[in-house]
Image (tube, rainbow, N blue to C red; front, side):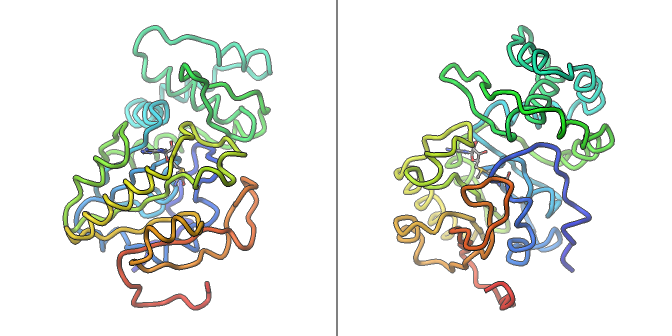
Length: 284
Ligand SMILES: C[S@@+](CC[C@H](N)C(=O)[O-])C[C@H]1O[C@@H](n2cnc3c(N)ncnc32)[C@H](O)[C@@H]1O
């Protein structure tokens, strides 16, 4: 039985381009918690929308954004402390910049996580962008999205992460370690040169065409090891060319170049290395 999206989704961070809004289109193509025999693996974690919706028994979650992985680590280990510190942060614009500029001298994981959570929930449009020193540099956005989360939600997030390995890593080594029985869900950045260059949403913008080629090679090896995977990706013809041997389905809606707004003709596809027995005609 498929687990319903509503019961499982846990939105604790804002992530433009995150998959929360299109879970209903993606989940019917993915295995359920019970169907995944090995690990659920998500090498481009972001906000983990698909991970939380599937709620797998065991997971390997990775992203190249170190601060993001620290945030997940901090909430998993200290949800109550993170909430206490988060609550204490200022309510105004000046306060936002003061916290943004606070240097964290020691390795205080709870403070680090609370600071990032606060910046994420009060910065402009939930963007996640760093300057060349790796410092978060998004401007102030307001307090309206700050109190839609609460301590209970952070505790739930922490519990859900208990059986997950969290890795600060490039995708390739994560995919290369997968074994038969594992399932990989992938949501890499869009092809640079298109909307991704115009809209600086992600921390690590430079996802080059050579990275898509690395991804394609790594997924080919995983397919030979009989690992099942599914990926949401731009329908740009150069990308489709790299994955044309697999099953490609059009995702009818997406946030496209307007984060937060669901549009028709997303320009995104779902590519799987397995055939869908139950084809969802209503989506296409
Ligand atoms: C489209 S977002 C994932 C969004 C996620 N599916 C969600 O629902 O929130 C792509 C993610 O890939 C990460 N990323 C970019 N380059 C990477 C790389 N070489 N290896 C691993 N992660 C990378 C970014 O930091 C970003 O979090």
